[in-house]
Length: 400
Image 1 (cartoon, rainbow, N blue to C red):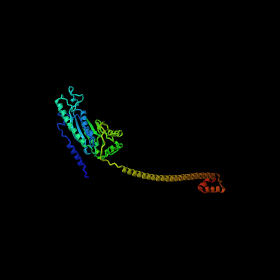
Image 2: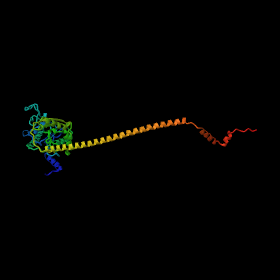
Image 3: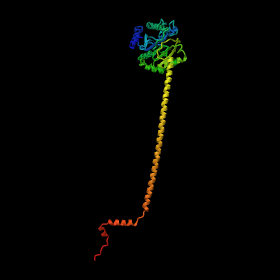
Image 4: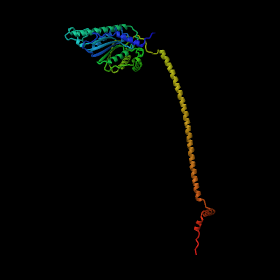
């Protein structure tokens, strides 16, 4: 299979988009002297088939959207493309130069009490208003034919992609640069179908916005994510799908998912007729039931081995702690015994010292002095006397 490089795909997507751009001519531009006072985008998702009975529905909604818009509004209509790098294609641009009330003439004979539109231009309006209104109506009809053609081309199609998030991100970035008020209209079943996230490939109870946000952050094409402005009114013409979002619980979860995506933006859902389910090529790498079963068995085996290993490590740690505790107890016991021996030795030492002191005192008090010892002491004293000393102590002679 031949793979086209991403830069070539981007260039191809832009070239395809440029071929569908309408030149800004008198049919699409404002009249001289007029300025854009409001911008609006109508995003049409026809990457999945629409029931043949309702193929005209997106065109009808274009008419309804244009009626809601105030005067001097630039309305651009985009369709989802097949390229994630260029996720939307411009299929028409028109400028509404009037209010619908301007087309109502009180004295008109054919007035039916409703606001005027392209199919009900009173004869009494001014020539300039009639010209600008007719130009706008012609432009809108041309865009509607293109939408009808795209809807017819999708009949019985197998959905290969639906880069809805990418298109909404690009639209949000585009409208964020507008210096005038803006609004967004979306015709879609709001089913994203890409390889990084797909409402088709996942079960409805797996539509978790937190997991989606993580996948969106990791996706290289979604690095430059854009949060819709809180001042942006968003109206979603919501098509439920039989077999999935037609049921209450899946639809509620689906709408909550997109409410989280749009954040603080003023979001409203306008339910449309339920469409049939469709076939789609799987894009996400989701394992088959047999693979899931094998994975679960391997997970259980690995978990058991891990638990057993942890149990053995805990048992070894417990034994080591017990051994260390026993050794510590032995050391503590030996220390106590040493302290007791030391205490006993100190006690014995103190006792002996006291006994010694007692015996020494008794010997000094009770020991007698013998005569021989006294004489010897006297002789020792005499022997130490000098002659001069002896003379001084002798009896002096009388001098006659």
